[in-house]
Length: 478
Image 1 (tube, rainbow, N blue to C red):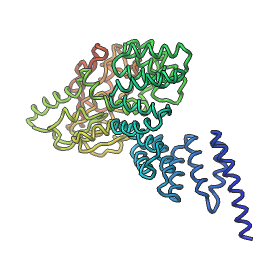
Image 2: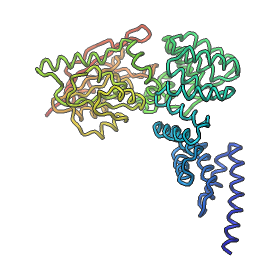
Image 3: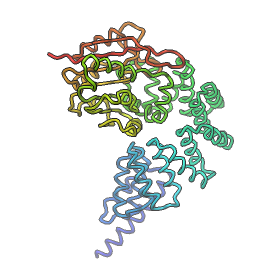
Image 4: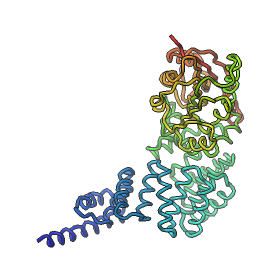
């Protein structure tokens, strides 16, 4: 009897699996998943059913569940290149880039001939800002699959990330000629032109594609950025809003669309800030220093004066660098932070750049308020260079920072200056500006005493000075 039951179960299992495969091939994962869940509850789950369940979950955007399902399948089939790729793709989608790279590398080792595994590894390397390494793998895949548009575009993206703009332009021009109906090669080529500081050509290319009737979020987004680069912010707003309508779940575009429409959220979302700086990390320093960015230097000058007045050679306690970016404040304070230097930043790629400098004793990839809530150290200096341009309401942020100051500690930060007398405004660029009166009030509300609020030019933007305030404050001690 038990043999008959087992035989019946096998027949049912095979039928369910066959139907689920057909649904997956027809790109109907939501219909396939219930069948696969039924198989998942059998005493002896077939290995193909475990893999198919992970595929369905990944296709449905349930990335955490897909990674877990692939992990369960790997327990039954350890070393499977296909399952390692599945888990790697799920992890990459979740932002777990290092784990995704580990899976991709293991998949390549398990199947050295797999172009899919090499392509995944290249994508993970790009997410981690390792463009030159990504080029090596992406080139191999593109060479093996010359007709595969995705492989060719991946190589072009790696070229762009590595700053090899001429190579990217040549490849993208060939892809555009091969498939003139596709928007992505045009958008990427225009983005590459923008990074080459040819905003006018980027505008021409994207407008021409839109005029041909192409409807694509990337075209509107690149055009908007090209207009911003030309200081035509009002024109850019329409295209940020169009891009956001086409990609309603994109937090980066939503913030810029909101800003261009006069919206007033109290701060930029974490997803927006991460998207900006994860993509910007590789060229951040070169571009920012090219704009004459002065805030780290202003912090160094203020610290030198502070130490000279106190007759001390180094800062009398640890330093906290909020929104540390690639570590420019740490570089500016080199030699003065003998008691330790802690950096906090939301962007994983920025943290990777900072880590490579080897000058921070502690680094946290975390959201601002979560990091301050978790940290228990009291700091002699808390610095926030160019952080508060992503906050409108400053009271809570300053209060949280003040709580981490030692009794005699100082806080130094910059804000972009609003020409309007009251409060704060979200500019069309997506950055916040604050008035002198508002900053003064926010300091008082946060238990900080202003020692200096000085007007300063923070940097240049499009040849025009960005005016701001450089603030030095002390924690109020009762």
